Structure formats: structure tokens, C-alpha cells
Image (cartoon, rainbow, N blue to C red; front, top):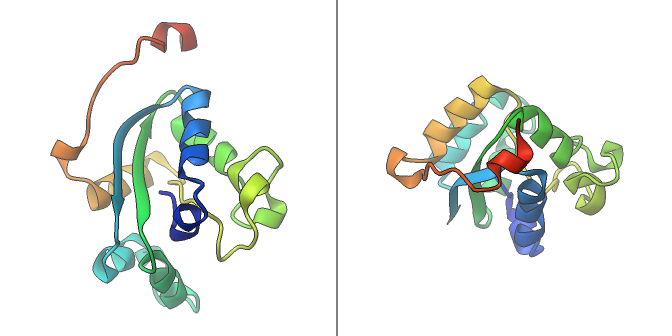
Length: 143
């Protein structure tokens, strides 16, 4: 998901292009204003922590771009493309390393595991919003 700061800073195209350039396939995409209920469900693993309410308030403050990407090792590779949570520790060349300013405004969320991705996809998308397709480039990317 491209968070409100990524949308407000007009980095949507730049962020999407990084995933496309890596060879991943976009199968779900929507711009949306997040409800408080969805935000609380999304961040429920942090419920009870001191920063929970600020996470929720931030994610509902402006539109986000929810996305689903497919491809080999997509979760692990996405973590590299995104960079460390704190932009000060993110590698140059990663999204957060190149554009991030602070940990509270770190531009993008990415699932940390396949199981997490499945849960988040169910939270953010309806089945009919997903488009299964195979780009012609597949044979040029994978053996």
C-alpha cells in the first residue's frame, strides 16, 4: 500500500514503476480513503502499543493506493524494494532509502510474510477486484 504521504508527495508512479521494473505483475489496484474500522483491523497486531492510535490516524488522514503484486519471491523482494521501516536505515536504491524522511512518514506498507499478505488481501480487496493475467514478459523473467 502506498501510504498517505506517498500519495500526497506524488510518488505513486515512481513507486509502482519500481515493482514493474523488477518484473512483478500488478493484479489489484485501487485508490481509497481508509475507514477507521479497516485501519484498526489492518494494524490490530499493534493494538495496545503506544503508537497504535497515531498509525490509525495517519492511515485515514488522506487517500492510499492499495495494491497486490504477484511474482516469484514477491514478498521477500518487495521488502528489499521498500527498504527498512526507518528511512534513516534504509539502503539507497530502496523506496524508503531514496524518498523516506522519517519513520512516521515512510511512504509504503508491504506485507512481511505470505500469510500476512493473504490476510491483508482479504481485508483490502473483494475477489471481483482482482485481475488474474499473465504478461507476455513472463518467459523473459523466469525459466
